[in-house]
Amino acid sequence: MIQLIELGKRFGNLVAVDGINLKVDSGEAFGFLGPNGAGKTTTIKMMAGLIKPTSGKVVIDGWDLAEHPNRAKKVVGFIPDRPFLYEKLTALEFLKFIAGLYNFSSNGVEGKIDYLFGLFGLTDWRNELIESFSHGMKQRLVMASAFVHQPKLIIVDEPMVGLDPKGAKLVKEVFRGFCAKGGTIFMSTHTLEIAEEVCDRIAIIQEGKIIAVGNMKELKERTGSDGKNLESVFFKLTGGEEVKRIVDALKV
Image (cartoon, rainbow, N blue to C red):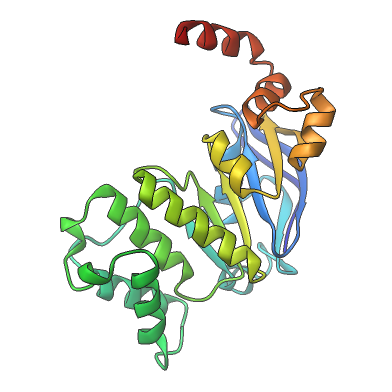
């Protein structure tokens, strides 16, 4: 479903992403982790077609994003870390607008939208202006909009920002259900517990380079962290064990 081939991005003299290679199969929930400034969001923006790579390429569902942007983007739903919405529209008007951008057939779109409102707990708010929504409700609406054109791939940056525990649980269930039906999730998150709970495989990026890829068992074996959680694996791989010891000491 996803191939990143020698993908790189420079901003002047700064190398934000340094020739990374990744392959993600259909049906996978794939986690993309790393410290602040590691290159996660830059990579995601290149995958979503928001910025152009300096080198390499992004291939989605067999389509080179640079050569066939419309074909590639047609199968992608993108959920940014901050909800950007037209707040003078109602929730229903917004989802109809998004469906129209993808030329989604008007035949049956109402049923799809009704389903998404129910799935994300927004049915009672469908005719309310978005400006009256809480941050968590806006985030759920953005997520609903990413599914409205029936994509094969969801690219998501920090999915749990602004969500309460109930909303976070709902989103995890939606993501797992999507992958169970053959969809693919590519998720960047700082919440390691979410990645450990939801993702089939995980890549860790640091200073623009992929330093590890694998499932939890493989990552634990690589770091000798058998029996420990993803947080321990992450700190060992990224050189943050001393920081972790300080944080743990402050908890006492």
